[in-house]
Length: 416
Image 1 (cartoon, helix red, strand yellow):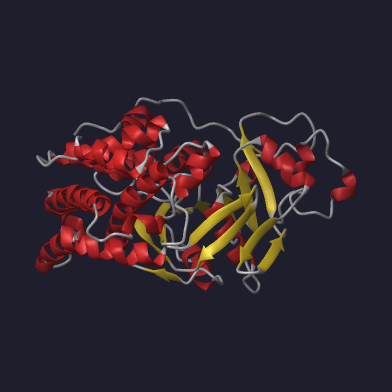
Image 2 (cartoon, rainbow, N blue to C red):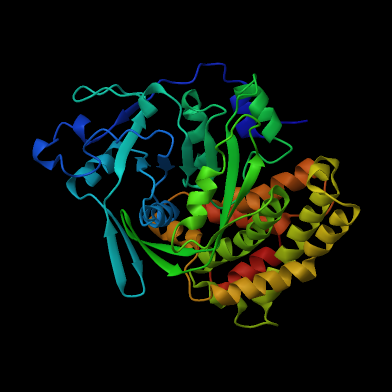
């Protein structure tokens, strides 16, 4: 089996996992001892079993952190930022802000850390998790960064750890590649309990550490590759399901896999098209029989053929619990059913701005490779004879940063 580039890179990397330091505000040169009463300027309170580390403080990270923090007798939470400048910004103005309708809530009861191999010159020199194991890690980075960031902290993960991925796109640890990753990084089998989340909440950015919860929906969480040795794996899902505003629910592995695939189809159509056209989601569906909708339908058809080939492949046998499961999934992933699903979701999020368009406008890297790129790569892996040329064209356009008028985009995709 040919390995995808991310897994090939990991397989060729024989270096030991890095020793990482957990910087807090106490390690900053401009640290002011008068701010000791502010969380994030002190060593975390000692509750390793119940503590939840949230890696990635974008829109979804803010939603999850603020919801968990409002639990009665909730868990201690450590926010993990990805660069020193964010730790400095938190030190100057601590707190996460979440807005719902006209209700603005600011919460600061968090510990905040920056994990780096750079040893601090001042303040306490603590390793991540004080050199022990992270018990609960919630990963809410962008999809492309999720597994690389988790791989980087593997020194502090073992079978006592639970790791939940909460981003768009397919979790990379689903078969056929999950077992290969574990055999490379956890050859003795002491890997964490791997979970993933699918969230349909709509969240937009209002600035650094500030988000608006524009569409309250739900969150599903379930196992991807469970650890056979982790007896406390239900703690993190339980906290997420109890947290206010999330409407969390635990689901079995097969249902989680299907939900991720369905959301991938939605993201691979709404996100790139709205980014290129610079429009709200609802514009894509304004004219049911128009040429733009015909482009949408052609993208659905390409995605349907890839997902149906995936369902037929032997490596998905473990997802099938009865003889009728494969037949049911082939129908669920038919172009007709996917179209109905997309129209339903499109109507619900018609007034929202897609996450990719938000990234486009902010000049950030998009998740196009984790949406449309995943479909293209999976089609190649499966040997699907059908074309994914229009999804490939969307990847090229988005990665170029181009925006187009509707007629130009339609002509471009029709000629792809």
